[in-house]
Image 1 (tube, protein in one colour):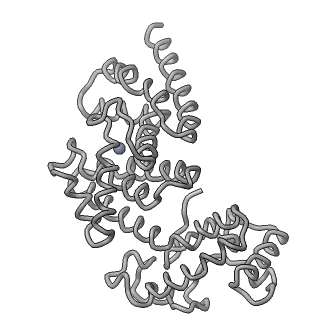
Image 2: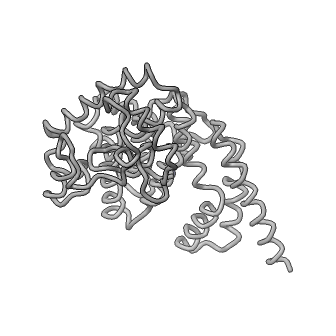
Length: 313
Ligand SMILES: [Zn+2]
């Protein structure tokens, strides 16, 4: 399921309290959450199911940091859009959240901890990702005629899906490398040395981290690294995510859209399936991507068979 970004960067979709459709919880699940909340020190007793259930932040809800109220007053949805970000207030919010993490790690099961981490402990990363989405959308709209923010967003989603199964990966690098991986695509932009990516990263992450992200981006490009496997797990994840988007129904749609735009005859687009798309399944790095790729590969083959039959009839 997609992330649901709260104003402070929490991801409501992972929160065991969140009950808005389609995240309804049973009475038993809510009670378990109330017990968990006491266990991790968020409450000093087991509260009622009514109190523990939540359908998302509202300005009238109590919040120690008044984040939702503050965003509502500014007419923005989340802190990521605020010109004053990161203000004192949100920094304190991050710090207090972080102070709960060691206890959660200690008293929670792995599954509980993973959920809480996704829901609460990645606030900053989620807000940063949100800023990157805005940056990328603007970059493609202004410089590339709308090409192709949607592809980038899909790659980001797949990368997050894969990263979830690779707990040892650096999620900050995966997130930003996925979102920025085409920000300096030479087909669309005339930039050198990841200029567009670096412009976003500057001041938002350390220079070492920015370097790591740019190296990850460099290791992903198909044209620059044909057949070469990235050295890092993060590079492998983003490369898989990028390649998945060239397969299956999306891959077919993208191939013909590109072919049409460049005035290519049908057969030229079909050749691209054999030259590139059908090779991708066996080039996946991670187990998750291999599974996803198998389904998409089968769809590509079925499509080509059908096309062949219709054309040669
Ligand atoms: Zn791409």
